[in-house]
View 1 (spheres, rainbow, N blue to C red):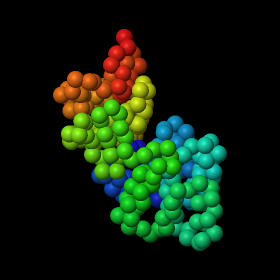
View 2: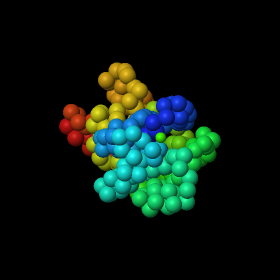
View 3: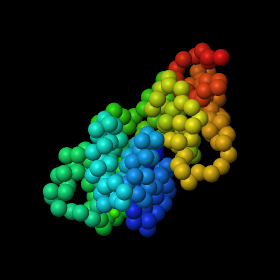
View 4: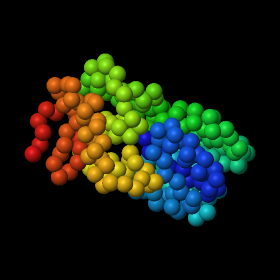
Length: 228
Ligand code: CA
């Protein structure tokens, strides 16, 4: 899952990003409201941790724009402002949860997880494609009831494919969703990880789920016929 942290206090942003990456999330950071909004317009984030007092554009304005666009991205508002009026205003603007600074990382993580397992974004925590089952909450993957052990990026890739069953996802889309901006590496990284994933998910099964759509990208689904 890919998260955005919009926070101008660099130390706070850095600590959060490090902690969340250690919990297997792909994390981007924006220190400015305008940057945050631009990134949210370009990337489909699963969750945004949004500071209210940001240079460039306030968190409240970002929230307003996001909801006006009809985007259901989960938003956890993070702020030093703690009056009831502030909380009410932001919850009414479409914030999904609220955390007042200073806070403990453990609480933030618990709230992030709670938000990500909530179904209002149209997502349930259990993804099923054919006999493949992914629990987004525990990050456990099973195929035909048998547990499959995946690395963090393999899991991220599989979860992304499985949350868009039958849809062709380009390498760029996959790169943007599963890896974050801190990634600097081989451009064929997606192909490499698809190969790892196939070895674990498909190789032992007669019915292959991960399909290569030549010239386009990858898709996960039940269709047995590979397009040319
Ligand atoms: Ca701030």
